[in-house]
Image (cartoon, rainbow over all chains, first blue to last red; front, side, top):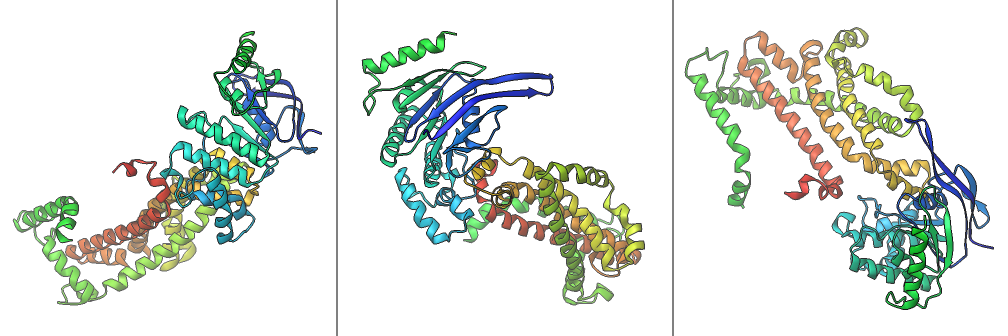
Length: 250
Length: 269
């Protein structure tokens, strides 16, 4: 039984000004297995973020259903940790307070919260920055805080919406590597949205290639490449060529 | 310490000192009758007597400055705190809930353009004279900037922060308490600072008409007795108290909103 199931998802947006309907996602069905690293790849505007937002519970599909652990998803919850495109940290909270935000909601004591958050802060390589505020850190560091926060929820799945899109190339490649390590070590399930073919191939166990609007899944492609992935290898490039062809077919 | 203090603050004093010297010179030049245009030195001497009862030059007010300030201050604080409580709660409710917004906002926007001072006749009829109408007026006047800015702060909260909080399992109340409130705090403080200014202005207005003590009363009473030195000393006292209260709010704000500093023009200095 797969962990997450999307069934016949359709999403239309109403444009109240022009009295028209826009079909954003057209009949997407998709299953995500436990411990899978699924990359959803597609051009901008293909509805890939919308898809993720539905799994997160932020947006509602027009028809179809999203299940996780056989339960219908109707609203956001801590069983799905989201890492946003921007770090989206509370600017008035320190790093450790941001990371352990959900423990505060549960009424866990301050000392306990701090102690437990340190482990995750260390995990994303930010030891020593726990008392800093987001404005004192770089974009990449803040994004790490966002990842630590999602990990600390100990969720069934981590949903990542182009989290490295606004990070410089060097930092990006470091963080991709670290993310893969975290995924291998902690046996988590990741759904990762990206518009970069390379990124999808560096990270994913599977890549779902989406087409331009209205978004559909063109192909679900298992990636059988050894890790760490070698971006210069022939196999890597033949996958890349396949995906490029799929994206250009339209 | 002294030299660096002066280096840093010298600019703050240039304009006030120049104005005072200019005023002193004009006043002593005999261009106008000195009683109607008293020089700053005389205002200060009367003010000192009003404060400490040194030479009796402020007559019946001699030594009663603190009392006047406290009566005015008490009205300001009472009215202001009521306005803050109602304004923030209502502002958050209106900003957060579409239903509350439709229910209440049009009424607020219709009452808002009415100058608070125009309520004085009704305030006196309903509440009599002395403290009650003054506090009513202060509440009314400082309520509007506070509520309007709170609404704005709540409505402009980053949607993604709310998403992040609900992703971590926040209930509606927790979102309001832990996301909306802190996110709206910069705007709320804008309202609080505008509100305190209005509060002082309206206390004085009320005191000139419906109250028999306080800075506004001394001002109006001195006007009847052609004591323009005292009139100016009252004005200066109001300015000073308004300034100090704003300073206090600003200090609290800087402490609470340090996280905002580096994302604004302030952070560049």
